[in-house]
Every structure is written in structure tokens, then in C-alpha cells.
Length: 377
Image (cartoon, rainbow, N blue to C red):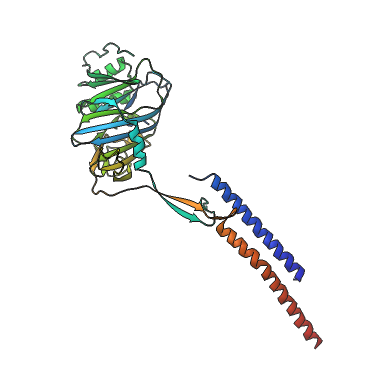
């Protein structure tokens, strides 16, 4: 190879290397600008296949004092009918009041991920290889439920009921605008047999349809053990997702109150009703009055008829082990427009590439001189 060819090869090699690095820098810059980053608690009513009631999110704060339980329930729904309501069962009569929306925001501060930062010198993070009540409508021979309390909470009207007859409860709900599907009505009988109470929530006649984030509603009731009603979700035809923020003296586990029946799938194993996504001592001052520990339980039920085994009972965990959320954020170290690693490689390449080419030329010339001298001799 002649000296001219070597110089041309060196220039071409340098230009190809520069083009490749600029291409990588462009991809990295694009990545930097665009970084990679339903109702389980009860039953919606009335049942209308033509109506659309979608549950976007359900979250509840559960606190337990040893004898009294409080559930702050917050729902996000989308509805096209003003006649949408909700049936919420409790083991004893509930006192229904407005919840505290601010608590949910403080909880998000409490469980905020712990962020660590890693330096990326090459810019390759993100790349991967490979109305008014109607008249009593009880069916003949059935007993209507007793109306214990009626409370107006903003746009909602809450009616607390005690029922001793499932047919009578279903007939009353139907006559008062809470018509339920047959599947839900059948599950109500389970609660009636256990002596549970019911809170029927619906929009008052002078309000607009449900849409978006609803103000939280607080249910306070006596309970031998903390429980979250879930059984009615067996009748759901859509996937269910629920988040429980459980405050207690210790870390808690969420388990089903009954074993799996034939044909049912205990999805989380060993009777568990969800996964613990966060657990730790409460440090936010506004939350410390609720309990010493916060446990966040998340559950997804893709086939509710098979995966919802019953109500959720909250029991003390075997140990107070923390379970925090960690996030690693990557920051690209740059020299000018390029990631530092590639910039250094390019600099070394540009500095050493021509020197190597010139050395090769010098060696080639020396070889030719020696060869010519040998022929002369």
C-alpha cells in the first residue's frame, strides 16, 4: 500500500468513526429529550348493560384501633348515567361522613421512592438488546331492610341499612333505584347471612352524573378484626385493581377470609389477597396519628369470578420488615454534545489515528529503502 493510499485510508477511517459517534450522540440526545419512564369495595348500581360505568382507580385508607375500623374510600369513575350508586357492606352499622382528601396526598409523600443517581458516560441507558326514595318495593313474603340512617354528603346521599332477608334487601334496592345484577344480588345473601350492614350510596337528584375523581367517603364501624369488603367483586366482568393504605401498630398482611373453592384460583398463593408494595414506619407528622406503621397492599384480579375468594382480612405480619420503593435515575455525563465516554474515545482516535498512519508510512518508506539498497549491492 502506497503512502498516498495509507493517508487516504486513515482519513476515511477517521471520518467513519466521527460519523458513527455523531449518530450515537443524536440518538442519545433524542432519548434524553424523551426519557423512558375497577369497584372492588362493593357493587355499582343500578345494573344496566347499556350504561357505561368505568372504574379508573380505587384506593382506600384503612385504620384500626383494636375495636373500631375506619375506611376512607376514594374512587375515580366515568359514568354516563345520573342514576349510578354504590353498595358498601360492613360487619356492623357504619357511620358515614366525608373523608379527608388531603390524607391521600400526604401518603404519596410518605411512600415516595428513594432515588439514587447513576452516572452514564456512554449514553446507552435505555437501550435494550434483543332522587327521593321510592315506596317500599319488597317482594311478597320477604322482609324489607330497616333504614338506620340517611346522610347527605355533598352530591351523595348515603342510606345505612340492616337486612335480615336477602330477597327483601334486593327488592328494596331495586325499588329505590339501586337495581343490581342477579350475580351481585346472589352475593348479597352471603353478607345477610353473616349479619352485615349495608350503606347504599347514590347521587342526589339535583346533581350531575359521576365523572372523574370523587371526594373520599369515610365509613367508621366496629370490627373484631380489620376487614375490607371484596366479595361482591366476584360478580365483576372487568379486571379489578385496588390499593389499600393500611395503618396499624405493625406491618400487616392482606389475606382472604376463606379458602379457595373448587375451580377458584388463589392467584397470590397461601390465601394472600394482594402484594405488599410498600411497608415502613410512619414518618409524616400528618399521618402519625393514624398508626405507627403503614402497609400498602395492591391487588389485581384479572378474572374476578375466579381470583376474588372473599373479603380481605388484615392480619399482623410475621415481622416488621420494611419494603421501600427504590428508583435509579441515570444522568448522562457529557463533554459538549457527546457523552463523555464517546467524546474521549473520539479524542484519542483523532490524536492517535494520524500518528499511527504516519508511522506506517515511515515504516513502509524505510522498508523500501532497505530493499533498494539490497538490490544495489
